[in-house]
Image (cartoon, rainbow, N blue to C red; front, side, top):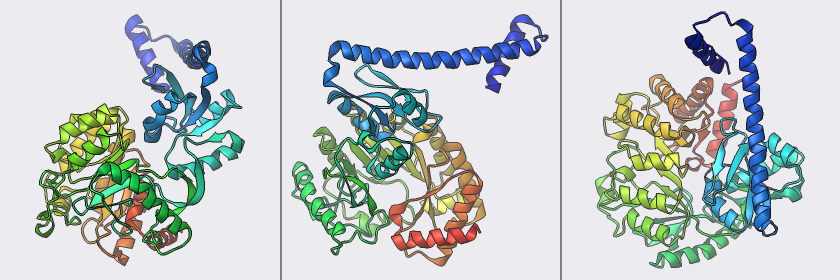
Length: 476
């Protein structure tokens, strides 16, 4: 507001040449500011009233009207379907103040305001609230709503849910490996259970439900399974609908290559790269997306921008309104990725792992640190909220002050404070030196105003517990 005042004063000076305006201009600016806020609220009420009136004049009885909690990728993937099935939002809740007062437009021509939880409860005290967030957030937001006086009967979900052991990938994610002869539902090599592929992607998507349902039962009945030590497994509200909805695309193919040679990735080495797959990531992406088997894709098949099919993939991604995540080394800038960021269809995840050009080249095998940083800046200009930065802790390589401080400085410029992640190289055993380096990195981030999070899939339960204890000791 102070900036707005200054601009108004400056404009007044230019127009009148007068500086003798004193408190009157301050009063005028305050009044204009108050009127502007009041008009904004009136417009919001009118917008909601018009929407309800139009619905009433057509077929309101066939629709259910509710408050939607959440504005992220899950909502974006499900909004049109919800509206088409007669579930229409009155407004959206997002407690991020930077998102509030913004408008969400749907393809139906409807527009909806984003407001705070407090404002939504004031405007719609009896409306049902649908939680439009990923599974792993359902329980926490349910508790939050109850704490704010919302009756359990008013809290709704898009699918039937149950309280059990599970994780956000179990029962929704499908990943192929071994030349597409088998698939799994886990993104961590440590804890994967594999099932044989039928050779037909559509058939695999059907058999996936049966196979994963049995694995979930084994987990909850405490039968032997590979998931038991994974830190991602926890009790929460999980969907009762077991169906592959998200595709992850790792592969080894002469058309799916990477222009980096990261020291923690063995895929580029001679003994691995010779094992070419017969099917490329583009073939799988096209089959799943064109047949509408999934609406969510996590692309981490080598480097997407280095693929000769990159532009085709990004265009199909946009056409089919796929949501998801693209993992990239950001060495090549693509306008198609920037466009997907602007349209809130993807998050962009980059493992930078260094804060100096020298260490970057040592880790990545390529000397292009500042090119990567510049490209990340350009992507961030499209949507800072959808940027993610990761730092894989590598003892003796990037555990020094210069790299950590340099990375943090770049992170403050490119991502929001809650979207910095640290990770363990799960090809190795965690060491005392790595524990100390991780605690050091976390404390440096927090001192800079960043709230770093672990990339949980790279840690076991015991490793995360050990880090928490050490971190607690370091802050006493």
